[in-house]
Structures are given as structure tokens and as C-alpha cells.
Image 1 (cartoon, one colour):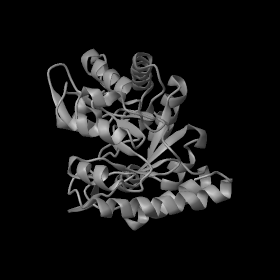
Image 2 (tube, one colour):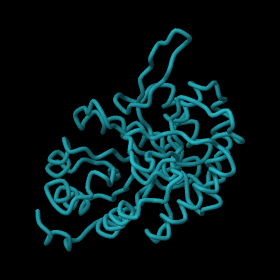
Image 3 (spheres, helix red, strand yellow):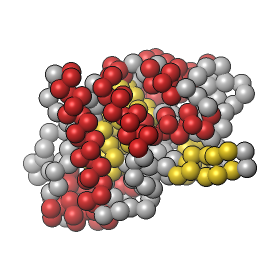
Length: 294
């Protein structure tokens, strides 16, 4: 799979109003050989920022048959430092090459002056932090020449000096920057459970018109001396409570392209496809209510 394949015909770029699946290396051959009935695929662009090699070749081949979304984990929108121009340039190259239907990033930060972490760290929800995040989103969108989506985080601590609720911070960041939202239902459930927040109040604060994508994933529960902690590890099937929240959500805001996300304990592709089928059925039901073709 060489550079010559880049010019091959592709499906249209927009992500359809269907369920998609995280694309993992274990499933490249399955997708190419069996061409499963899934609406679209999403990848972390940081895994494809090399100049060549099999991953880029496989992704190019799959992109010919499916719409694609890029879900970044390395832009660090909430860092006090400027956005890394080298990383942003590499992201721009992938956007230009693969023409994804959507590009998204997390409401978090992950690096300081001389260090990086694989964790997506939470923010202080203050006006100063909001101004910083908006400036970074503006910079990313200007370089990419397109609107991005911002994802709500899963969190395990709160800052005493936060001045606003997470959902209000998220919505205001999107409104001021012109970005959209990637609403991760599992993250809402995890964070609200960990902090004792009102899940219904959180979701009702999210304007339907801002939501461009939904994520669904699994999480684990750890028992502590003073209670339980939910950890967003993307290593298991979507739990019943998250499915219920998701179905209620899209009945309220209407159908939205939905991703089944899995990043660890990767199962056979058929298991992920089964979850995508459940999400697809929920999207169809919501589409009927809103008279939207799904």
C-alpha cells in the first residue's frame, strides 16, 4: 500500500447519522476483507503521525470505503503553554490527507514546559481558564481551517477555586470559539457519579444544536474505603446505565452520529459491531421521532 493509493476514489467525507466504531490495528484486515456494515470509523491521529509504514497504508485503504473522524489526544487545549505548533502541523497534514468528516479534541491538558503525560488532566473551571481554552481552540481551528468538536472529560477530582459548573464551562467554550461539542455519555456518567453531580441537570444544560458527535464506552468501578470510584478505561462494553442515558438523550436532542469507543481489552470486531447495531437501532428510533433519515 503505497503513496499511489492516495488518489483512489473515496466515499464522501461527511460522517453519516449512523453508529461508528473505533478503528484498531487488530481489526484492519477484518474491515478490509469483510467490509462490515458500520457507518464510519474514528482514530487517534497521534497513532498516524509518522511519514509512512503499514498503519498509514491500512488507514488509507479503509478511508476509501468509509468516512473517517479524527479524535485527537495531544493538542492539550487547557495547557498554560501555547499549542505545540509541530503537533498541530502534523494534525493538519492528516486532515488534508484523509479529509475526515469530523475532528475532535478533549477539554483537558497533558503537558507542561518539559514534560508530557498520557493522562488527560482536568481543568479549573474559571474565567481565566476559559479564555485560555477559547484562544487555543481558535488557534487550532485557524490552522486546520475547520470547526472542531470539544469533548467533555471524565474526572476524578474537583478544584476548590472553580467558578462554574463543568457543563457551563464546556458550552461557553464552544459558543465563544464557534466549536461544536462531542458529548461523551459515559464520561458524563463517570464524572457525575464520582462527584455527586446531577446527571439530568448536566445533560439538560447541553444545547442540542452544539452536539456534533456522541461517544459511548465502558468503564470500571473501584471500591475504596469511603465509597466507589468509576474509571473511564474504555476497556469493556457499554453498561446498562449509560445505554439508558444515551437513548433518553437522543430522544431529547435528536439523532447524532455515535461512536462505540474501545481503547483497551480489544475484543473481536463482531462484539463492537454488535454494540454499534444497538446504537444504530436507538438512532433509528430517534430519527423516526424527529423525522430524520438514519
